[in-house]
Every structure is written in structure tokens, then in C-alpha cells.
Image (cartoon, rainbow, N blue to C red; front, side, top):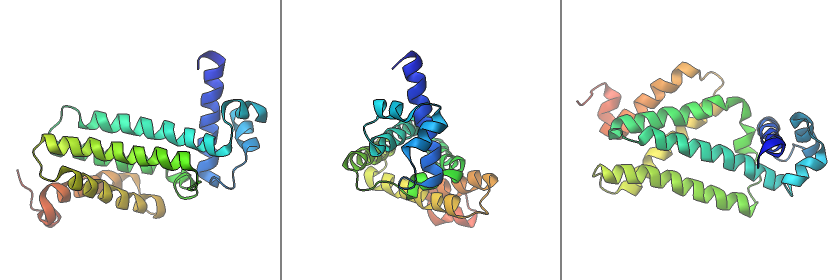
Length: 194
């Protein structure tokens, strides 16, 4: 979509992101999203048939940007450096969205289109890490990829739910997790391998 239509479309997605993120899917109203976007309620329905479809579009845009950043973090980098950059991006992503936690916790999880998209997103993310690990000769790269992403997902919960978690904690947490993944528990003892 170009021109005015593209601007309205993006304005609707931006507004929906904010409203869904602060109120959750079920408490958000299309009329609020339209008002925030500066368009008529009917205009929202010109682009999206339902609130579920709008939520999926918001999620899709966010996830596609996320994957593009992650791909850039891994490209042309040594494994440890790439994983550290990915860990920092992953955790900073959630820190920046700390005020929009309902975007992650109050979602239409019974929407088949959203669930299908999320399955594909998770697989794409896993494959990205798996392919890098395989290229570096890591055995069982898919299992390792799932373990790395699993660590990041658990650490994101601290960011989203701990009101005392600060931005300066993000990089330190990412470095600790990457060292733990790369070198095992020795990393937690302060022993670093070259």
C-alpha cells in the first residue's frame, strides 16, 4: 500500500500496538484504536475484517522486524559474538516493550491465523540459530538452538514482570547467559575461556 493508504495502515498498526499493549486484546476496542490512529472506525475495517486480524497484523509486523534484526546480528560474525548480539537484541526488545506487556500476555490465543503465524515465527527463529550453530560445527544444533532461545525467553520474564529490572541490567544479563551457553557453568564462576 502506498501514499495515504500506507500512512493510514501504519497509523492503525501503531495505534493498535499501543492500545493492545496497554489494555490487552480483550479490553481493547476498535473505536479506541481508530481514535488513536486519527481515522474513522470504518477505516479500520477497510483494512482489517476483525480485531483478531488486526492483532495478527500488529504481531506480524513486529515479529518480521525482530527476525530481520536477529539475522543482522548473526551475519558475518563468530558464533560467540553473534549469539551475544542476539541475546542483547532479544532482551532489549522486551525491555523496550516493558510498558506493553499485555501485548504478550493478553492475546487471542484461540485465533487459528495468529497461532499459525506464531508457529512459523518460532520455527524461523529456531532455524536461524540452528543454522548458525550447524555452520560452526555444533552437534545437535536444533536442540542447542532451542536451549539458547529458551534461556532468552525465561530471562525476558524478569524484564517484563520485575519492576526493578533496569536497562543497565540487560547487557549484563545477556553477557552472562551467552557465556553460560557457550562455556557452561564455568562462565558463572568467573572463569572465561579464550
